[in-house]
Length: 327
Image 1 (cartoon, rainbow, N blue to C red):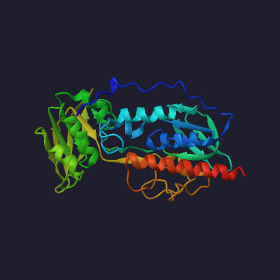
Image 2 (cartoon, one colour; image 1 turned 90 degrees about the vertical axis):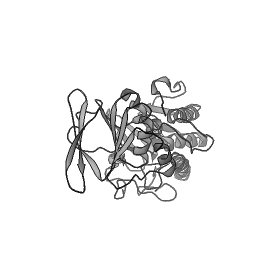
Image 3 (tube, rainbow, N blue to C red; image 1 turned 60 degrees about the horizontal axis):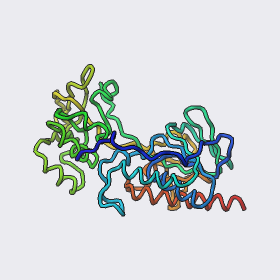
Image 4 (cartoon, rainbow, N blue to C red; image 1 turned 120 degrees about the vertical axis):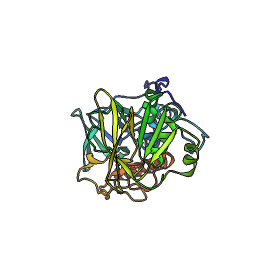
């Protein structure tokens, strides 16, 4: 399954307004994935003044090669679905900021959102929909070789590995999806799985097993990555006997899960043991007037359709909070 990211142009931003640091918004939304963008639509339809701060439009959704379980679409690629979401938001004159990271929030009757460029935004309520980021291996050579053969986004980087020997760290859904995307272009794909078997969904395994150029190394982990200008080999450790073997490689895709983007909440909100923001059934956090939705939260299942629904719920809760606070 191939997808050329460079062939896609996101919709223009003619209807977006500049974020105003002198304003006190009713709602500030942090995050531009399915939860954040859906929350934006619901807030704007309710008529509350809204700003949305996005590090990278689409989040994980933009890095998904194929979406086949979002209602209304039998098949759509991730970037295409992001475009649809963004077009929906664009019909409103929402205050929009893309490319900056939130570094801190502060609670209070008027809440503060601090950005990485030093700006401080103010709002009566906040919806956090900041999603998750790819987890790193933390092994020697990984940091030095990112962009030189070490990658985390298959849909972005698979075309660069045409005819190459590549490895995938991780045998869950994301790892298997990565291998499925790589198999048509790479000469050989090897999945390195720390367990005794792959743990991806059956529908994904059925597709994977249709490729003859994919093999597997079980009960093992990547313990090191070597190379100069690019990856040349990786070291794989057998967890049963501790032995380490080096393999020639042109690339490594790290697909071992994700970590919630919640560090900017500091001690303002309660987090669970996984670093996810704890919320109740109404997307309320432990701090009054601060709501959260999507993969950054403690909601168990991480799916685009669930994130979108949670974003709608968080928006309705935030709008209700604003309405009651103004009485």
